[in-house]
Amino acid sequence: MGKSRQYVWCLIEFTNGEQQWYCVSTVLREAILQEREVNPYWKNTMIGNYLTVSTRRYINGRAPLTVGKIKRISVSNHRTRGTNWTRNQFVTPEHLMNFRSAYNYLRHDYSWYNHFAIWMALKYWHNELKQVQIRKTKRRIKQLRWKTRLIAKKARKRQNRSKQ
Image 1 (cartoon, rainbow, N blue to C red):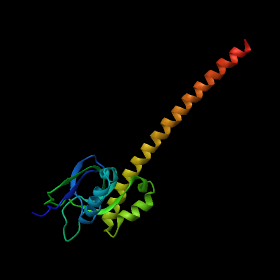
Image 2 (cartoon, rainbow, N blue to C red; image 1 turned 60 degrees about the horizontal axis):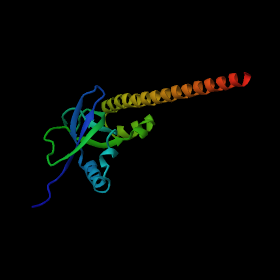
Image 3 (cartoon, rainbow, N blue to C red; image 1 turned 135 degrees about the vertical axis):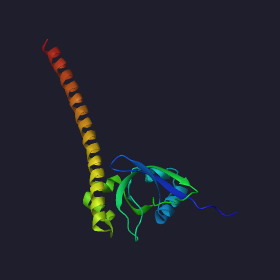
């Protein structure tokens, strides 16, 4: 019996916090399955990336699109019967830090409405990444201040001992 076809599914988180499973497009699926053969940590290459997905049914070959964050990945022998297929375009968090470049890549040749929806979703995810970056920087500053105070305290103790 022949090998059954495998489908890659991604749990996508939207900007409103909702999560939904999407079946990965054919082109992207082939690339992910090839990565799976050579990389034991293949899931980590996609988790946390941002992927273009449709939010409703396709009508006349068009559907409203947005960008969601990949939370989990699974492989199954079942494909989707519905409209929840991903598009081929995705960006990494590192690429998204350069907002203009990421937007120009993801907006592709879609309608003006989808350009706007992709821009809004990307801006949300970009701002979320910036907030994480700011929190890490604040934590580092707090640690440096604490170390500086500790060093200053030790220096004052030494100075007081040397005066006596």
